[in-house]
Image (cartoon, protein in one colour):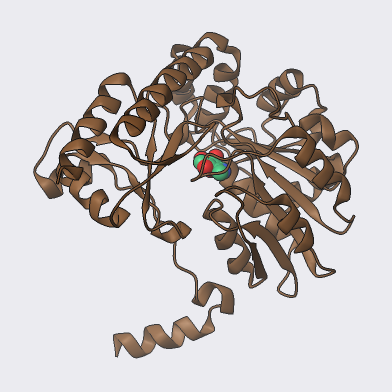
Length: 371
Ligand SMILES: *Cc1c(COP(=O)(O)O)cnc(C)c1O
């Protein structure tokens, strides 16, 4: 009976949603500690900052607790003004979101209908197929080049039915990136009926001189949307706050469909304070640089191949199924990310942690892979 009812309900759902599998988040530490009867588990599975927020963001979040009975500022005026000054764009170009995930979803809802196509790469961020299929639109998935985005394949995949292209720069879970010249040529070549989203969730970590800040390009391209987040380098993943920068015309459309209070007041206050805390951001970058060097050196000496990454995680290749090593690492109290869902069943992704966490991970991996 229950089954019959739920399959009837299921058949009422829009076709895209019916065949959708939900985003798989990393398991919370507490849940795993209960399950395994372990303590002191190390979670390097969701690209979170090992430092967490800085002292200023933390103090601002705490101070915001005094106003919990009030609705947040639905326009997010102060945070938008702070971003406007920081990024050198008008506040009217900024759309705040409940995480940048929210703005990715908003862009798709504004521009994409069932008859449209959305272009993104193989091994790209999991949210792109989810938002595409939730609308019932067709996903045009292009083959990767050296695990990263082939912008040439993506350009060729554009048809008159294409409305949206998602580019993650750098990409998660591969840590790959596209240069300024490549990306600028791509944006210039895209026809006007296509919206290009460049997702820069890890922008703060990238040290490459040819890595582009794409925000200035919105002045020339009213079909370009650049997204960023406070979840990664700023260490505020729990608060859910990110944003899009676009032409005011696109921002106006996104503003029509967003929930009126999509960013809460604690997040607004903490994000604004985090933007002012340059020292903490620099510390995040330093910890990441050192940790990335440590992890990749260890992979080299273990003879494990990895995909060179400019972000705060690295994806490495295994001689056996990633899922198997993932479970063995769990039993050692270390959570990483299996990548079967990304078409990479022989790889695992590990987030760069604190020195002590990286060492725990490497010691566990060495034990697990010992013949
Ligand atoms: C983590 C991540 C995001 C953003 O997540 P939010 O917490 O929703 O801001 C966006 N894009 C990519 C590629 C990511 O890895």
